[in-house]
Amino acid sequence: MNAPRQLWSDLAEERSRCPVTRHEDANAVRVTSYAGVKEMLRDFRSFSNRFGTVEPGQELPVESQVLAFADPPRHSRQRKLLTAALSASRVEHLHEAMQQTVDGLIDAIIATGSPDFELLSSLAGPFPALMTAELMGVPHELRERFVYYSHLSELSTAMPGVYDAELAQWSEMIEELVRQRRAVGPGASDDLIATMCFAETDGQRFSDREVAQMVQLVNSAGNTTTTTLISNIVYALDEFPEQKKLFLSDIDGLVDSVIEEGLRYDGPIQGLGRLSQCPVQVQGYDIAEGERVFGSYAAASHDPEVYERPDEFVAGRDWRKLPPHMGFGYGIHHCIGANLARLEARVALTTLYKRLPGLGVQPGFTPEAVPGWTFRGWMGMMLRYETKEQS
Amino acid sequence: MKTELAADGLRLSIDHDLCSGTGYCQERLPALFAVEDRRAWLREDFDLATVGRDDLEDAAAACPWFAITVEEQ
Image (cartoon, rainbow over all chains, first blue to last red; front, side):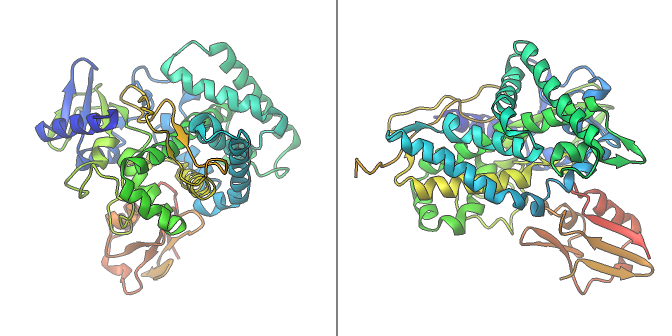
């Protein structure tokens, strides 16, 4: 049994025993039913984000309380300023740039002449990071460094402290971009950093530090998750050859439901935590004040009460009729990059399967799963396609 | 299907430039909201007067894209 199957089987067992379970070893409560995760995420007053969501602990310093690490009303103030820039209609403006970027990366894969390539490093990794840099208006000459720092910041979630010196340089780079925009004044550009610099609520603007923290969070929350979404779907399609065949028979018609199913079946975020602010109940079970509580999005999205054949990847589910999956979370913190991620995944998947015939996981390759409770992805994904020389 | 309804001096609207189709409004008030083509819509035949302002505000507050506006007209 591979790692995600083992995970879903363990989560199903935990859910059937009790959907709200205290784990002494992790010093945390885990919620594993769809109804339970939803109930918890709706109750943002009892379950706080400002103590962190990966390892909820100490209350974060105020300038670090941004977006996913903030509670209302601070959270609503910040989020309101970004929704227009990340709405479905707005991200559509990036469609052409996305297509060019993906085509460029696939050109480079084809140019090696080898039928084998590693998906994360050659496409699924750089693509979302480059698009975030585009969205932020990072100058071209700084993009490579910007993407590199962004990658380090993700590594640092697993290895805290190791990259602090480089991450301080990243903060400095971003704060410089902020200062430049402030110096030019509003209206000079409409990139996301400028939007954050000049957005006003009740006559107040964000501090340079606050903008820098938001830029870093959008990167660390948005890049690897999209990378993972793309590679998890490529792997899942190979696990279900009939579904892959169906998808390949109508790539444009099925890509959107394939992406929704990918988010449900094997979404990049396994679960996130909150810190309870008072004695509270979930599904009738008592939770003490000050408890670390994790909502397992993976378990909720595999709840047989909500989805038929939950452990199967079904390419053609009718998502107009199904309850929303938990791939983007639920409630006021619903992934703000969801529209961007969906479009990036659509461009990446359609282009990969159209341009690289016979694309699939390299025969004999067994990917290694990312460990822990937070993420669900693969460390690397070796793929193979049919080059002209072979066929 | 509409993006605007008014009754009793109250106006309810959905901004489709912001709406991203999470469907949370539909979950709160399925008789009023319906999601189609990844956008929320208001059912034509719904009489706004049959629902309390608090419930409308609650549905609006549930939108993570702040796409729903309830206002007096």
